Image 1 (spheres, one colour):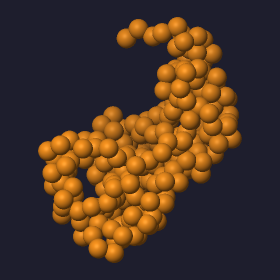
Image 2 (cartoon, rainbow, N blue to C red):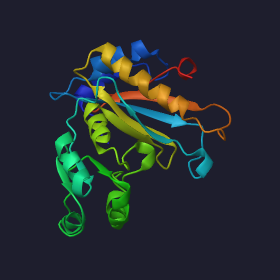
Image 3 (spheres, helix red, strand yellow):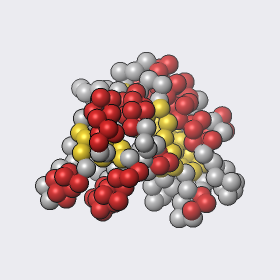
Image 4 (cartoon, one colour):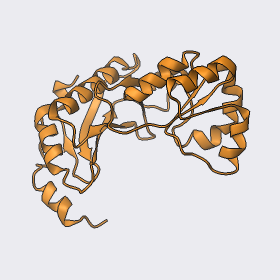
Length: 230
């Protein structure tokens, strides 16, 4: 894939052979984010685990102190008082079985996070083939299967993100926007790394943080010195 002039200019700022401290990397990622829109800053973290084994799975959620800079639409599956509670807490969409055909037949996916009360999981389970591949399936580890829908919604709106391994044992998550200050990005990044270090499986052997890269939507990847992150 051919890269544009803007990418080529940004890439000149980064030494591909070097690894950087967090402060240096964040300074560089902000400088290399030169698109006309507010680029998302992402972290890509390769772990020394094998996610095919249940005892080496790394998955959870963390509230970034400064949020992600993105407004998030929440869908809640709940009934009765819990549905009322979800609406009061600010969920964009609340419903139960009546939402199934809209998602299954009409392909409606105009939401970013799905929360469900435990009693609704038999209903939500029918959407597994649709929500699962898109990373939208509610999960107790991520705090999205819960009776405390108010807390779940407030955390999500405040900047809660879910992290999980992909098939190559890499976690991909947003840590903010290019418009954030360096301090805000550093706080968010450190909060994420602390959570991932804390989630280290007992079965993980050898180096846990294999590689950590941050990048903007349109910019080059910047590798961090992992020895200082463990």
